[in-house]
Image 1 (cartoon, rainbow, N blue to C red):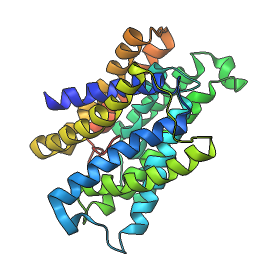
Image 2: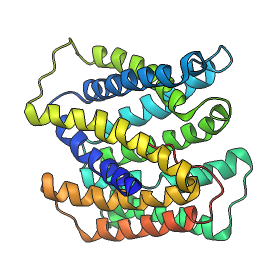
Image 3: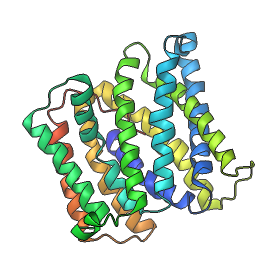
Image 4: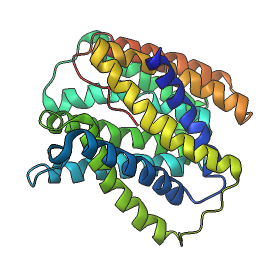
Amino acid sequence: MSLTLTALLWGGNSVTAKYVVSQIEPMTAVFLRFSGITFLLICLTLYQEGKKGIPNLVQWPSIIAMGAFGLFINNALQFIGLSYTSAVNCSLISATTPAMTASFTSFFMNAKLTGQQWLGVAASLFGVLLIISKGSLSAISSLNINYGDILIFFSQVSWAFYSIKGRSVMKTFSPIATTAWTGLVGTILFFLFAVWYGFDGEVNLNSYGWFSMIYMILGSGILAFCWWNQGIVAIGPNRTTIFTNIIPLSGMCFATFFLHESINWSQLTGAACIIIGICMTSLTSHWDFWHRH
């Protein structure tokens, strides 16, 4: 039950983020979100693990790299992308992470993929192509595609690199501590860029905007993360990953209900291809794709 709720919370994240960036600058939005998440996670890490939860000098370079790629680049591209595209497209394209991580693991870590897994990767990428081109071959040939969709796609590329790097770090460092300190790195970078883009400490969000921000910090941030880890302990990472199939569906439903976004045939077909690809890639996967924002 908790894993289903986790996937529903993550599905709603693109909807709340879409609303927030309609009111404030994307870099300011993502800085506020991760400053809240990071503060709470560092407090929780120090409470549970004490000094063992603080990175040593050997671990810090990897922590910094993960914070830069997995949090800063990933979320910056995603929040900026949401300024140009729909929450539905964001949910669908973000669902390609397991397939993308599997292919990168094959290339960079010499891990072998089965024929079924490669078909799953191809199906997911085809689904993304359908979504960003809106099913139009002319849009692909003339490169007349949505700028935001491209940013969302490359945000998933950066997350795939983060996942690969995280495997080695979390052999000697707990998942919650890793997330806390990589979050600190990302938050510092977000703050610098938010100031660059004009952030002066003033946040002009209405009441629903603040509710959305709290949701992104506590709901799709802290609560979802804790439930996800409990799922891994209870049933293992491979079975847990299957629940990510719910995310694009819940994202579409939330975007349609709360933002009144329409869904066309290319999005539905693309969603089906992505979900099929996730199943083909994940059900026989030997890698841990649990660590998702």
